[in-house]
Length: 422
Image (cartoon, rainbow, N blue to C red; front, side):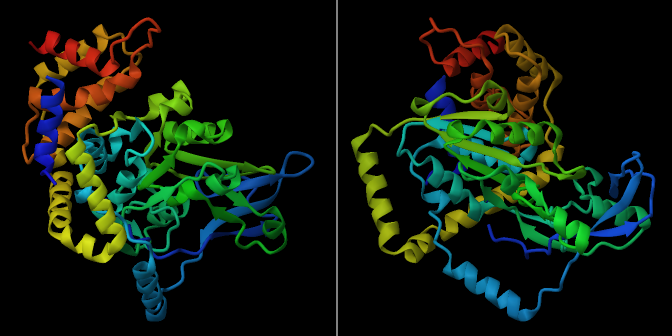
């Protein structure tokens, strides 16, 4: 596969990253009758009595159990028995999609990527192949929300309480998680459930975290996102906007951090995506069917090799995969030192203004994506070429649609870019 630097160059020319962390125990809720008529800032919530006074005070706590050697051996065995993933480095073509995915791994604050294209073009295969390249992050051991021990905004309620009390946190390293959100998932499975009966009778295991909790500080992937039910779209919109998921059931309210890289894929022929959700995706990649006959033959042969002997096929791409992992890790560590000139910032905003892009999200994402690309190339300064590479993906889905316009929105962005940047 061509190097990642070649990937970025090829896009410009054409237009002129999971092993699960130890499964923590679910949070438990302890009931203290007649205690705590006030309401804690982060730690608790009350059930109202008839006269409006809280009858019970609930404190959310986690029960973390030690992972013994037998359990670790079982996890290793389970990992080895999992279905092998197609290597990211073995994906032929689709440079635009691959670059957007890599930039989001380098800077999760870009906001994810929406991948739209023909059926059978390797969209879901490419996204799932990203698992092997995902770097490790620091998390609080035993916390079901993958809380960041260094960022209070990315901490769960209980972890934040421990920090406030001055307790020492047990920190461990785990790979970034990728969670699949099925189209048929229920809202309780996505948000988490509160067992009212257990909460009132036993006071234990009252809240079971859902997929949003598992995806915190990781990747949430929705295949065929344009077919997702409206009530789940509303949940994603709420979490994507605030970075927190709030579960309200029977007078009980529980909140936990839910900041994730949202990746969606779909076929535009099967329906349009709601504009509110489309705007939440930082970047938009278009995928087309490969037309070159020799390239199509190569793709078929590579897939046949993988199906025949997945382990041998993955081993043949091991060196390239490790090189990509090192590039991503280096880019993530150097991202904070990348600078962009004031003149380039002004020109980016001018392009957005002249294209009548609503809001400022397009400006922000374009700046972030250009910095991530510069970091991926090993530089500490953004160039106009970096901006030209990423700006179509950052703005094409934010343009107002004209039913009489036959030109692709990405080409409109490129034309305006050269007009402003000269």
